Amino acid sequence: MQTISFVILHYGNVKVTKACVESIQRLQTTDTIHIIVVDNDWNKSKEERSLLRQSIGGIEVVEMMDDVGFSKANNAGYQYTREHHNPDYIIVANNDITFEQKAFLEILKQAYKETESDVIGPDVYSTAHKVHQSPIDVCGRTEAQVDYTIRMNAFALRFFAICYPFLRKSMGVQAIKKNSTLWNESQMEVVPCGACIIVTRRFIEKEERLFLPETKFYYEEYILHYRCSKKGYRILYCPKLQVLHADGVATQNKTENEKKRIQFIMKNTLESARRYRRLLQKDDWDEL
Image (cartoon, rainbow, N blue to C red; front, side, top):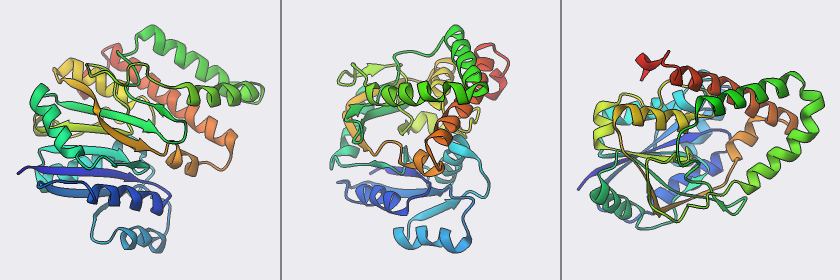
């Protein structure tokens, strides 16, 4: 019997998080399961935050007290379960993920037995857009590609009022068309979708944090891929594992309207791309 931990990042919608937790509780397994919910509703009152605990019963909750973003909040849950439960697997997922495969954990253990991979990404299927979102790329991004992303986001933010009509159309189309043509093929060393990432024993024993360096939002998958390539960790994309993704629920709750949503995405993408570029330029290798 093994120990498996789920780290669920909560923001905004208690019902969404409850559905995620309940889907985990329905999984078929004889293993020891721990569920850790990271409450990232840092700006809500104590009374409002208590609703989460009431909704999910006796599930362990780690509360974030500041606006730390995606990486640091997930790392808090990862570190908590690593120190308290010493798991064989840690499954880190957004709260808008549900686990509908009853045999999910048995499929996971078989995939690990066959490949001994350190990081495993399942097939993430967007129920909103009807597309498969993983893997997000077959390789890391080059410095030229990152430079282009930085230039375009910086330009669009500077002239946002003029660019907004085009951005609204193009980003909407991009979200719908984003569908990996290789989603049904098992692959190694690709970039998995960050909505659900699984790490196994060797990674857990050696790494105190899952995401490093810590970015607020976006590029986490590329940075993880780069870190794994530098440290010799193996990444597996396993299409036999599937999770459902109510895509965008958390991000949409963070914004009041479409303009602010797009600005939020572009601002954080710009900041994270700059951090990724510094990694490629070897300035931040000590952080890995």
